[in-house]
Image 1 (cartoon, rainbow, N blue to C red):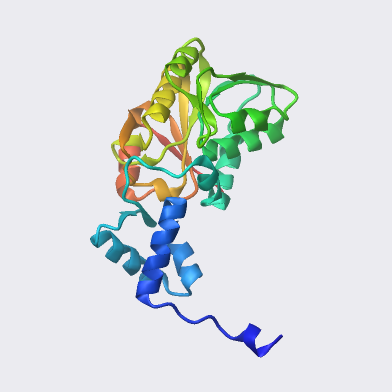
Image 2: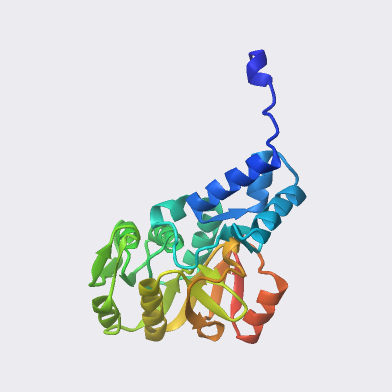
Length: 264
């Protein structure tokens, strides 16, 4: 190994760290304390202080365990979201797929975590009927020999990889399901929220037509408020996440009768 290769990386200044954090938030939408600490070679306390200062200046919104962009209406496309927190969301997807029983009729909405869920579900090769507005979900489940896939009508939105609009909502209302499996942009002690109104409308329609609703989301979404309210907590039956929620959120979920399943 050359002397140059063994030389430690120079420590970034606070100003340089802040600039990189803002770039990561613009790219991924959300960042985590532990990821920043590892990336910059600093303690988690230093990473938290960086996020606190950026939040105090209005540059980002502080979230449980990390930070997010200030915009309530703009969210990265599905391609970008798929790369963010992939390991955590993969664990969530596997745990949720293990809950599905042969013969279930499912509704699955469009999202990065629900697409990973579809991949995990396809590997189980169960006899299922799945209605979805998401092309990646349909493509993943098409590899399963025993899965009937019903793709919603609607207007295709390339950045989301799915279809939306009034035709989509009308189509969903023609069917009933054992379970709706949805994602979301944020979860508070009062409600599920998301950035896009068309996406919220699809989620609400699926919730209305399903006997049970399962929400999949990683811990970066805890205490994060997006532009539009999808539903109150009591319309959920369970959430599957990668880490235990903070105490205030646990209290709200318990009061609403929502089970919390932490993926191993």
